[in-house]
Length: 464
Image 1: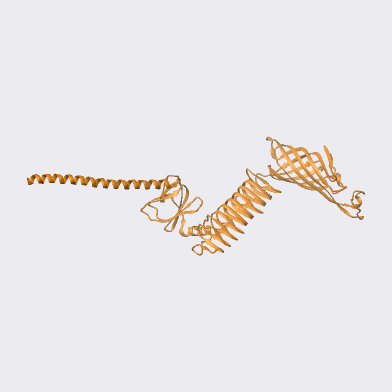
Image 2: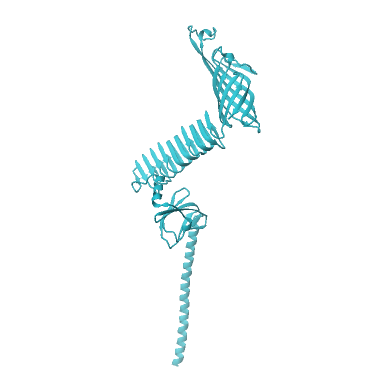
């Protein structure tokens, strides 16, 4: 009886333990699954919130030393110290980067391009030796000029000097940004020792590297390339990709864009428009210089011309610029009018050569010539003067001509050409009357001191 009771109790206890164990296992399993679900949701959330252009840079385990990473705008992105033996993964935006490694007494440099959603491994084999520590420090000093003597940023609203990691605008009498700066500077003197992305407004603005933005002041200077606008009395840059407006504009290494001022200079090839009183460019491509005098050293247009017109049978001219737009300077002589003046006149004009084919061209020109002289009163007939003047006085006589000439020309070769065409001239003259044309197709007086003359002209040119 006792044995039977013991067997029944044992079976019942075993069943109870099995049921309890199964419940415990279920509870543990449920808690484990909940943790996995929460962890997966968290990882999914992180993945969805990562930037679309995220890339990975893996620093190999053999790298050891101080590492600084700059983007293609030369701004510092990451700076860290790494020990050998363990790789290090960094999440960066896709693009080009320049990495500098200071290991021991040597400096190394490498450049990488990170692709979107990709991973790039950088090891010691990818670096090139730049220089020893002493040489590198000398190069850095020569490049940046000097470092912040205060050690940290100083902001007083009168004199401000900040380091590269400063992210606020600079307002003060003197503003100095050591390194790259990405913001706004306003004061009397603004100086950025390296690259600037932003705006400078002051009497003197200086960027020691590249400019991507806007400069407005009396003197604007960029020692690197200017990608943006310079507005001031004097604007200088090494290379231009944008707009310069001022009294003097200079692009040392040329560039493209627009220069507008009294004096515009590009010592290398320029692509764009120069608009000023005097323009100089080493060469012009896909553009035109427009001004009173435009000098293009290579590929420009320069020619000497002899022309015959209805007013002056002997006229010598000098043309300079480019074929799209050139200016001309004239000396004319009419031996049949020397009873009224010495027969010599001077003038200027501008024109354009428009090719029709390889040999023929259309050549519209505007020419302005003035003849001005003193005339003795006794030689003036009575009635020409509005009021009586004493005997022996001189009066001022003039004839101002403004002519539009429509030439059609022919190129014999690259040096010689001939052209001819009709002209229409407006004459404005003093009371004694205008210079009479040697011939004309049509002539009509307008009021007392103005007249219209339609004639014809021909010229022979030597290009050099």
